[in-house]
Image 1: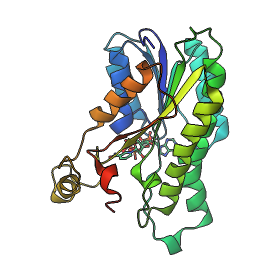
Image 2 (image 1 turned 90 degrees about the horizontal axis):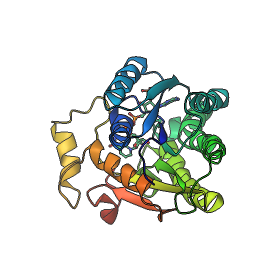
Image 3 (image 1 turned 30 degrees about the vertical axis):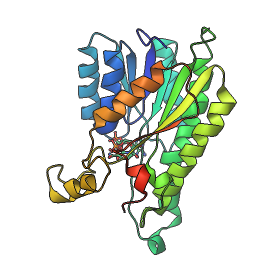
Length: 254
Ligand SMILES: NC(=O)c1ccc[n+]([C@@H]2O[C@H](COP(=O)([O-])OP(=O)(O)OC[C@H]3O[C@@H](n4cnc5c(N)ncnc54)[C@H](OP(=O)(O)O)[C@@H]3O)[C@@H](O)[C@H]2O)c1
């Protein structure tokens, strides 16, 4: 797909990996909807940075546990731009919790954000993406940001891993379901950005990188490059692309 003057929506796009993806798509000439949950100031800054690249952008707040707000996110996208060409489901809840302590609400919260929201966003996006006529060889694109925990079991990340495994399968079933007008692919990042509280210059993060085949941690821009590639390439659907320094070759590190 030629991305110039097309429209992308990135969930969790205010900062960190989602922001890197949003900026990379904006550099390709895409107009952006920056979804955020609680990071209002960061979303405002990201919108300003995106606009400075010469494209249009809005931000929109939605708690992804709330189906009504998810619908509003797509209504706002339709009202502002009248179309949607690329959806990136990047927002996620990353919760570490011992198995015995997982309560019903803990399970529900993570599954709602990491799996139900991407499903609902895909459903709303598909309706909006189909509103415009597209050349037969230029499908719209949905990109899900998954995690190696959806392939390999990590201790103390039960609900996170199960939700990401579901997201990987959602990618395949929707790729089949929505073809040929919409392509759906997933990126499976490895250690590209430490979670808040882990020092990016510290030993813990360096040690995680050292155990990967490429011997180092990554950067959100590697994920953003893969997102641009998947948005542009018109003949890839249902693919799960690791961007992980080869971590998937050796399995779980946790
Ligand atoms: N960082 C890594 O190295 C890494 C590795 C593997 C996979 N990934 C995947 O890559 C994606 C982005 O990673 P990241 O590290 O940038 O993620 P993150 O910082 O943990 O979370 C991304 C965003 O999700 C949003 N979010 C969480 N709960 C929400 C809710 N209930 N409603 C609305 N928004 C909510 C937050 O938005 P607000 O801040 O606005 O609330 C947050 O900015 C995630 O899917 C993650 O699983 C990342």
